[in-house]
Length: 572
Image (cartoon, rainbow, N blue to C red):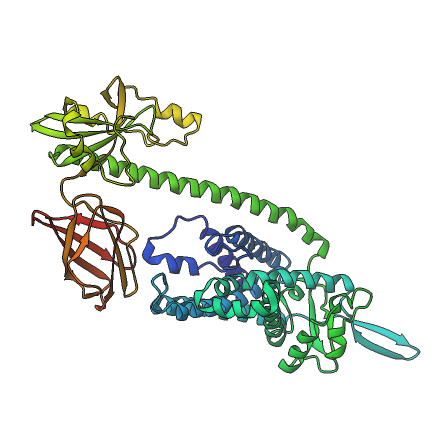
């Protein structure tokens, strides 16, 4: 008993700590996720983050409580742990099936994030969970005895099993309904959100209607649920919780055939109401089965009502903790991005050229922009053209870059003199600067440093960007590697250029399309796709572009493993 108790406590603590300990590096995220005993969700159409954090954390807390009750009652109180391990057992099987279906449907799909090795790894770990749950349930079930009532008539004594009450049967209906939703939600969402299956489901929906389709899928899940549990264990999760068991009359055991008939009879109209005034429902009577009680050996069932405030508290705490942690991660990401931007601006000011243009915004009015175009650079002293935007000179950034606008009106821009030290005052140390959705407290923090900002035209301005112009200005957006597929979206807000070729430096990539490709100043960008032929996850290649003056510009792209491409550097 001590071994089982320690094992269950270890399992529950593993699940609880998985929500408390910070996330592991990306390479281990799948293992980290699979070490959680519970992986269920409720039927929200948000696949990645619905209520699953609150639900799974609460289930882990209940499992810990169940383990402690099991220990304190010397193995007599096991309702909670049998109920929860039945959920683990079924949910891990469904998780393997869901992952396999997703992987098969995603072959050749650019958005696939599974690969065969991660599927095999996850399957091995999930099989471990399945075996562990199965062994614990078998061991605990062996220790249970059925409750018997004795009736004496004259000299004869008859014995019979005690049937589950109508209240227990209604309890089974609602709890099994809830568990079915928890176990099958992720599979259901995969089915309705997968393009490969959508046409099939739409065809069925055209005949049955959307509600009819959902009802059909739900009926299939319910049939699988009852047949699965009652054939293997002769229990459903709700029966584990109420300490009742389904048996075949005169035989005690339940065959697959009987479980199927018993389950199909459940869907006859009004069958669910048949046991309200009778302990035996229609599906019991017609399948010649009964739901009977086990001997009560643990705590009184009324004490389980104390779990209601525990569950409510778990949901409140996890909801608050989830909100706090998400805010914390956003703050950390924001700070890191801000620090990186400050360093980049500092380096760009040190290496400023006459081909650069500095974009500034008013510290008091973040929508007011001006531009500084270096004309002469003499050490730390720089002569700029001050490109101010007012009603006289309309500039439409969605239609053209600042470069042609500057050239077209070059003769009217006033010149000003600034030092690099002056420019560095425009590198704000305040992460909130530039955000136009600040609350009063953030606005106070943003305005706190009075020395910050470049003094121009009686106002103070903060640097928004420093970009090279008067040459191609290539950037990547929405570019990623996924398994053996790569997609690049290349934008150019500078001079038009031709992409002459792509040289593979590391890794073998077969690029689609023909070169050269003209890439002009536009925001949508050029799309390039390719197939990675090499087995290595690491790729490196150079994009070679040529501008209208026949000058070559070379950009280096590097990526190690799947995901978004961020390492894009001009090397020539």
